[in-house]
Length: 293
Image (cartoon, rainbow, N blue to C red; front, side, top):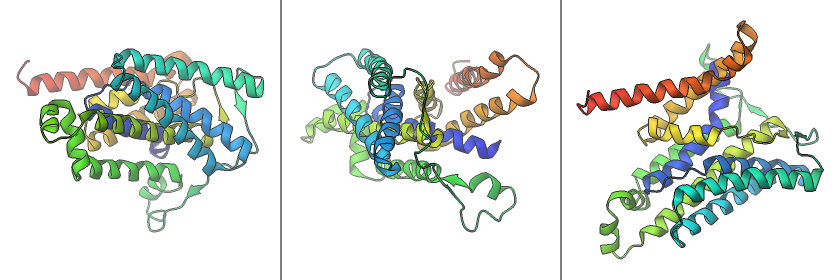
């Protein structure tokens, strides 16, 4: 179940890490769901026509980043409400994927592509032979390890570089940036682009790992990633812990479907119920820490 949790957490890790950039820049990016869905559809379609998984990943990143750029331009240049624009991006992604699926493949349902090369698992030298740890951390696809590397790179970029310092200053110290001759909106726009890139990678994993596209395949993962950002105190370490916790909850839900004699609807609701409990627990802990309770 722990091995499965690490696999399940991967798209959440990409989406939450990307959303962290816009959040620290002072922009609430609720379009993570739509960005994931756009990347997922673009990856499987491009891989089908080209026969290349690598090109599918590139197409996913480009499509998701393009939608993120459009969202950034609408909110930063045209001064649209970021919440409404994000909802519009989610609705657009949900609609356009169904329309294109029908136009290209004459189907509004599941698209299965058996000819697409499946992702290969990597056996990590030095870890695979270790009892328990080898079973948990080895024999995953390159996406899993890329997600960890991406999170590490995000931590370095955000906290160890001038770019990250300036991006984080956009939220509460915008005037200081302006006094230095810098334009905060440029850093916010960069945050949108990075979130699009990350969601493109996360979305491509959803379909390339499955070898198929299912309408609404993101299935709330973008919203969950947004919750994880806040539950993780907007820190990379918190995001890693949060994504693993949610991955474990969903892995348990999958296990429970065959092991427990319980209604299917109840079992499928376990991850959402876990989300609610975790939000309440973190809220209570935060208020007690601040002396409100």
